[in-house]
Amino acid sequence: YGVIHRLSTAYHPQTSGLVEVINRGLKRILERTVGENRALWSDKLEDALWVFRTAFKTPVGCTPYRLVYRKAWHLPLELEHKAFWALKHANLDLKTTGDHQKLQLNELSELRDQAYENSLIYKERSKKLHD
Image 1 (cartoon, helix red, strand yellow):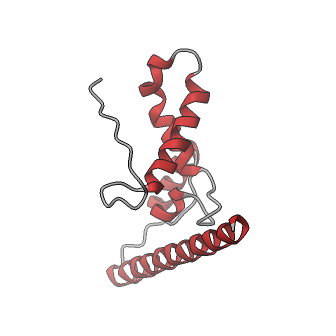
Image 2: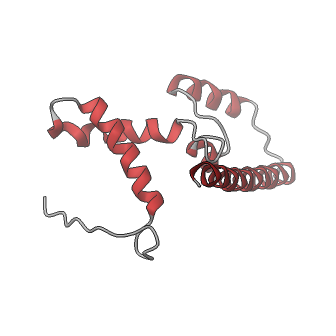
């Protein structure tokens, strides 16, 4: 496939140890879902990413999906129903809508800050246990 494999440390500016951890998790999910026929890994990649993004992560205290979208994930049927309900009860007042959007952005910022703090606490505990 023309892939060049390069080894590096987590402190190298062009690479990240966190990316390696994520890739290892995705690889583990793909190994379990693909099974014997490894040629079909690209067909299962989207599903593996969905599983990874919606799984609870202890270091940050929530799912990656929640960090990005500020809400829990829903199955497609639930999503369709909620979208219809939201359209049915839409509030078209611009000031109220703007205030609501600012509130949502502030809540998302707080959620990300909390996840960052949880990550630091988790790393500190892991270091104490390791040392």
